[in-house]
Structure formats: C-alpha cells, structure tokens
Length: 238
Image (cartoon, rainbow, N blue to C red; front, side):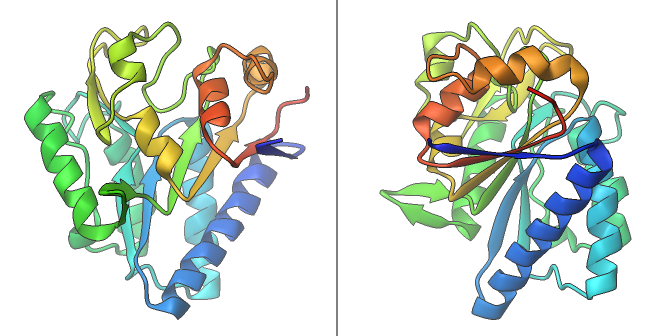
C-alpha cells in the first residue's frame, strides 16, 4: 500500500503524537544544517496540534530557526479575519514560539489573483530544494473535510485544477465559504517529500473509508494514488 494509517483514541492523543514526530523532523534538519520547509493547513484538529507543538517545543528546547512556513491553502480574507488560516497559526504557533517574520511566507488571501500565486511560488523556490525545476516541500500537513477534500481541493474539480502544474493556484467557486481561496496544487502535494494527513472527527468516517479505497473518488484518494507514500493520522474508527 502507498499509505500508512496510524490510529488514535482521540484528538488529543493524535495532536500530541504528531507534534512530537514533527519536532523530531525539525531536530533532524537542525543537525544537518538544512532548511525545513513545511506547509500548514487549518481546521479544528490543527488548533490542538499547534498547542501541543508549542508545549513540547518549549519542553525540548527545539530551535525553529531553520523552519520556513508556507500554507497548503488560505481563504481569501484579510490576515486578521477569524477565517484566516494565517491568523490561527500566528496566534497559536508563531507568537508563542517567537518565530521570525522572515520565516513566515503567508499566502496573501486578501488579494485573490494570479500575481499573488506567482509571488508565493517565487518565495517557495527561494527556500526549498528543486527537482526538475519544481520546488519540493519537506512536509505538508493536510486536514480532511467531511467530503474528503484536502487543502482547497474539492470533489468534482475541473480539469484545470486537476492538471495544474504550478505549485499554487487560485480556487474559484469553492463549495464551502468563502468561495475564493488559494491552494497548493495536486502537483505540489505529489512532489513533497512527506505528506501527513490529520483526519479527526466522527463525521468524517465515510470520507476516510472512501479515501482509502484504491478507486476512491475523494480528493484525498487522488493524493494517495498520486504519491508513493502518505501518512494518515486519524482518530476515526473505520
């Protein structure tokens, strides 16, 4: 199988374990002197995950100086809006850990344009490794919606979204509000060294089951098929 399903009894256990594993990745990058380029997502489980990361990072005295933060997706709202994925990360992760602004490469959701997407790609290329001239993230965190969507890649997407070959894209007419979003592409998610999916909540049981089928129809199922390995951390009984 090209995925690994790691199960937990509840969201707190999931968040704590994934935080510990991520800090191991950061510590490893620190020892090798390389950047650790990560893309964050939003979602309810992410709040617990950020809190666990801060608590454990302080206890372990982990340095984040080599970590560069990008986003798997962002809603097209100002960075102070409660719907902003940046706002949540800033309040729950960056401020408590005193992360430098130079390490934070937010998707400017308040300006939904192809120009913003190009700027985001330029920053991504500046700090990540390139393979076949394509930027490779070290780790992407993805949530999973009740319809099996990941980032802002939703079911029944157009061929334009499915086949995009640039790292970031503007998503129009999202089935969930707000309708305009910015998102990593399937190409960027496929190319990443690691993808960790945090799937939490009993209402997502059907979506997870469908996503793990070889012929699953959800966006997460597509990600799994496109990659050689995807780790799924879940508190959902299937």
